[in-house]
Each structure stands twice: as C-alpha cells, then as structure tokens.
Amino acid sequence: MKNIVKIFFCSVSFLFITFTTNSQQQVSFKASDGLLVTADLYKSGEKNPYLILCHQAHYSRGEYRETARKLMKLGYNCLAVDLRSGGEVNYVQNETALLAQSSNVSHDFIDASKDINAAIDFIYKIDKKRIILVGSSYSASLCLMIAKKDIRIKAVIAFSPGEFFYPRFSVRDSLSGLNKPAFICCSSFEYPYIEKLVENIPHGNLSLFKPQPGQTTLGSKILWNDNPYHNEYWLALLMFINKIKDTC
Image 1 (tube, rainbow, N blue to C red):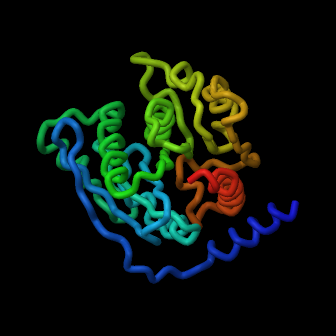
Image 2: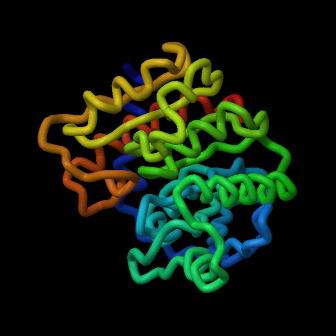
C-alpha cells in the first residue's frame, strides 16, 4: 500500500509540471523497403532506457507531444514515430505518410510494421538495452505482435488494440504465448472486446486495466490532460512501469 501511495504522489507531481526542455530532436531513418521514416527523439539522459511511441490511425508523432515529456520526467528517453499510415494531430503533420503517398509506397496498417521495426533498429544502435514498445489503436496491435517475436523488446504498452488486420490474420491468435510484460488499457465500452482479444496472453505477463464506466476516449489520448480520467490511467501505467523498471 505504501508503494501505491508513493507512486500516486509521484504521478500527481509530474502531471502538473511545466516542461521547458529543449531535448526534442527530429530524426529520420529508412524502413526495409527504403521509405524514409520521420520521428521525434526525446532524450532525458544518456543512460535512460527507451520507449518507442507509435500513434493511432489518421494521426502522427504529434499524438505524444504531451505524453513524451511526462515519460521523460519518469526517466525514459522516447522516440515518437510517424508511421506510414496516418495524418495530422496537434498541428504535427505525418511526414512519413506524406512521403509514402507521394512515392506510391504501400501504406496500409500492416505496412506500418516496417516503420516500427526500423525504429527498433534505430534505437538499438544507440543503446543495446531492451526497448519498451508503446502503441495506440492499430499500432498497439502491431506492437504486441512485434514484441512477441523481437528479443530486443522488453515490454509492451498497448492502448486500444484491436483486430485491424482481419481476415488476413487474427491478432488474438497471434498473441498466444506472448512472453513479455504487457500493459493494456482502453475505453470502458471497448473493455469487453479487449478482454477477449488478449485472453491468449499468459496471465502472468498481462496487466489489463479496467476503466470506470463512461470513459470513452480511444488510444493513447486517454493520457492527455483534457481527458477527465487521465490521472487514473497514469496511475495504472506508473504501477506497471514501477513493476518492470528493475529489468530495464
């Protein structure tokens, strides 16, 4: 109980901090098919572990402008990636999606896995510590599936995953035997569906957060300050991070 209280006060303190850091840097790297991928690199410290942040449908790396700075305060470096399937959010245009469209490169949801894999390669060259993947909506499903196969991934955080690739394959079936810690959360109306989606993940590896009734925000936007329930989600996320931090 003392640890939970300590985490709670930690969450309250950093949620209201005004960030003045200048450590955000735009970077780029190539996916396996040659597409140039744009990302924002947020560095809080040379020795800190990395989270790779992947956005939801129709969005961009701008989905994490607020969230990344809070994660930095927790002692993480972050790479917020423009996936090739996306658009604009928070006045940040998805540069990878624009380039994919103008270059006639395939940019379906499933194709974005190439961009996530390229981001993993990029970070692994910087730091050989195991990486945490963070996904939102369709990219949450991709992150869960990639985490199962890639030994460089330590854990995965998934906001509102789903069966975005059916009938090509089943996400639910693909997650059977996932042997990494996984934190999964969603809106209240999604919860019964998500509960079924992730039932094949071994119980010991799964942290499934059940939201209060009335929470309707989708994807990682549940962490934004304008979501009235955001403190509850941050507290649950902090508890998960605290549980796995010693293995970073």
